[in-house]
Image (tube, rainbow, N blue to C red; front, side):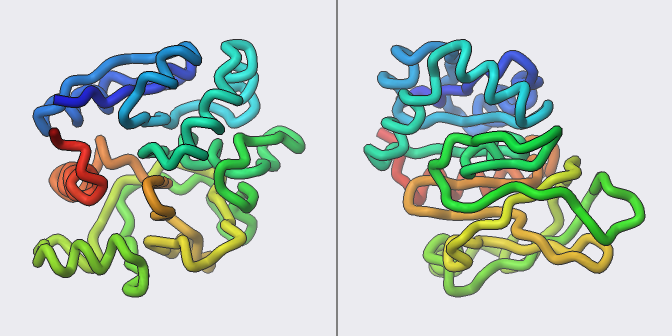
Length: 214
């Protein structure tokens, strides 16, 4: 069986993510070096902490180029919350910060909501033209098209290519991109590991979609 590699950002709680994949029957490995990245079959970039702190850690560990090369080779990546945001070109969190640039676009803060941090369960609305949604529909998965997931964030990505958007979510008067499917990249603003059966099934379906199983 292939390992699921979970990237250690030095600031993220990775234990619940580790438990999610083990519950799905996958072996896991915590990685933190370019050599580990190069040997991985699938990488999960977790998400708790600030954008600049995470990028500084990746730079210190010399992981930025290896992650970019890994993505260029069309290897699977799952980005969760902050891990999703890091995939983009830049973020305005605590100033102007350069991201990995694997996905084109930027990360911005909520502007119109009275409470700037989005916390709790919220509904996602699937883009029915997205290839992953079509896969889910063909699989006759009864959890789709629209379900609730758990969010904790104050920033969200704005992708340049709206065709990559897998789901959108409403928070106050703002609608934001809450997940992306781009070839072998699944990027989620919500936390699947905190979203009960919906999160578990979404990840499980993605792993089937990219055929990580031996």
